[in-house]
Amino acid sequence: MPLHHRNPTRRAALLGGISLLTLPASHLAAAATPAATTTAPAFNVWPNAAQVPGGIARLSLGPAASPPLAHAGDVPLLVLGDVIEWTALVGIPLAAKPGAASITVQAADGGARRQLAYTVAPKQYTEQRLKVAPGTVDLSAQDTTRYERERAHLEKIMATFSEPPLQAASLLMQVPVPGRRSSSFGLRRIFNGQARSPHSGMDIAAATGTPVMAPLPGRVIDTGDYFFNGNTIWLDHGGGLLSMYCHLSEIGAKPGDVLKTGERLGAVGATGRVTGPHLHWSVMLNRAMVDPALFLAA
Image (cartoon, rainbow, N blue to C red):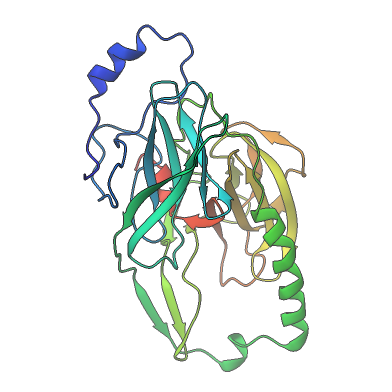
C-alpha cells in the first residue's frame, strides 16, 4: 500500500484531548506492505521526506504509549512523535542502491520484532569532470597516514547516539550562515578520470570571519583541525542527528558546550583543502550523510 497523506485536521481533533504533545506526526501512514513510494508532504513538516540516496524516509510506526525502538541493521534510528503516532526518520546513505529496503521495529517494552519495508527511488546527482595536476589529487604517504588516523577518530564521533529530542516542536533548521550555495549536496567530482566520493554536504560561500550559527539546539561533541576539513566542529542534536561545520577560521566552542539555535559556534574560513573561504555544512542521520536542504524551509 503506497504511503499517503495524513489528514492534519483529523489529527488536530485527536490531539485536542491529549495533554502530553511532542512532535507533529509524519505525513506518512504506516507501511504495511513490502514496499512504499515517495509522495510530497501534505503540509509542512521537517525534515522533508525524500526516499532517494542521500535523502530521508519518514516511516510511520503507529500509536504507542512509548516510542518504539527502530534500527537500520544494528544502527539505532531517530524516533519522534507522540502517543497518536510515532515516526522513524531514516537517513539513506548516498551509496544506497535503489530498490527495496527495510528497518526493524520493536516495542519499547520488548516483544517481537517486525520488519517495516520502504522503497529507495533512484536519483541522478550532478557530475563534474576536472583535470588537475596529479599532485593535487594523490596524497603523500605522510598525508595518507594523517588522514587514516583522523578517519578512525571521526568514525567514533559519527557513531554518537544520545537521547532523541522527544519534546522538539520541529526539526526545521536555520541556515548556519547567510550566503550563496556554491556547491550542492551529492555533487560527484571526477579528477583526471578518477571518481571521488560524492559531496557530502552543502557549501555556502561567505567572507572569512562571517559568524556561523547553530541551526538547531545541540551539544558540541568534537572540534579539531583536520587534513581535508580544516577547523571543524561537530554538533549532536540527539537521536543520531549530527551536523558538521568545516574550513572555519575560528572555532568558537569546545566539546561539552550546549548551544541554542542561532548561537555562534565559529566563523567562516578557508582552512583545510579548499580554494577559497566558505562553509562546508553536513548533516548526518543514523551515520548517513543526508541533504541539509531537507531540513530547510527554502
